[in-house]
Length: 350
Length: 77
Image (cartoon, rainbow over all chains, first blue to last red; front, side):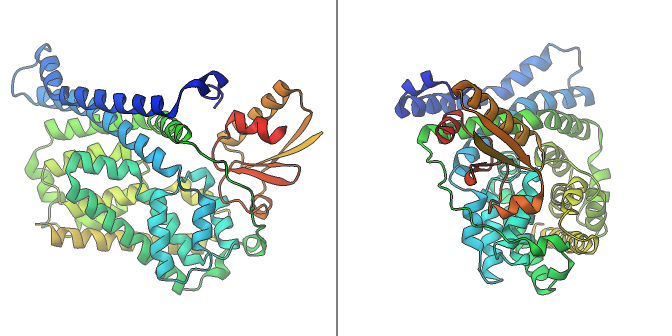
């Protein structure tokens, strides 16, 4: 980025950068503690009767918007720094030649940390497959990368607690590992587009740029600018939807259609979620509100996973390398995996 | 004349990268010919797995994300 590359900035020492980060984090925590009193105070100035639906909805909105945006900023920054230690090329080198099984596990775990953007999905796919990463292992990576991301985990942790975040992590990994494993065993290599099989990957023997601690902090700042800059509108829309649910939708209505006793709610949630496309940031405030109103955790997480993991834009991009049949198998297997996870969740969490 | 290839399917970052190369070359007074490679098979042939990538005189120097200007200056020199 040209704005960051000025030679004058070189004068700042790593210690100063670290101090800056520490100062920012301290200010963050101070401000964060004041959010609830601020929302109460702000709502007090509005002409809304105490205890009314409107007041409840507005309070929720005023409290949640800054809260979610602040949490997101912190999580994305931290993850941006961590991700500067990983690259798709390094991940590929780790996965090439790995057997199915262990390879699927490694791919899913690396999918969490490796920087990935959907516009890079095709070069990544071709780069992986042509370098000898098995098809099923490549799929484990491609499923895990968008589904288990820092935004989803960070927000779940912050809004719903570590238990939900960890279970989401565990089940997300399971879906990615199992789906990739199944696809690997179906031996579908023949269903790739012809040109993909003919690509002979050169080996990129370039030296990766050496990163200093300052570069890594900058990577975090860049990630915040890019991701938060892109999703803030989604988040506000999500919180507004959440606020509406919070204030107006009666709890027993949701409990009856999305509660544990309605077994059909899990498949319904998945079917509803597949054509919908949002990112984790937009959907999580809605998830929080739904859970608060008595919807079952498995149902809600299944909905969230299918919204994030299976999206039409991604299918269209992948069509360049995969045949329609292979895409259908991919969607089918992932959807089944999510379904299984949803049922299991509803069984485990009572 | 340096031969620079920017590898990427034509997303916004790839455009930005190509422009950064041109700007930096102009600033340093280096003659470059920038070519954009959008063909997926050709991109994969360079052995990278993330875009945008930069190839200078046949050698891959960068893959994934926007390059840093100080690195660009180093590669072009």
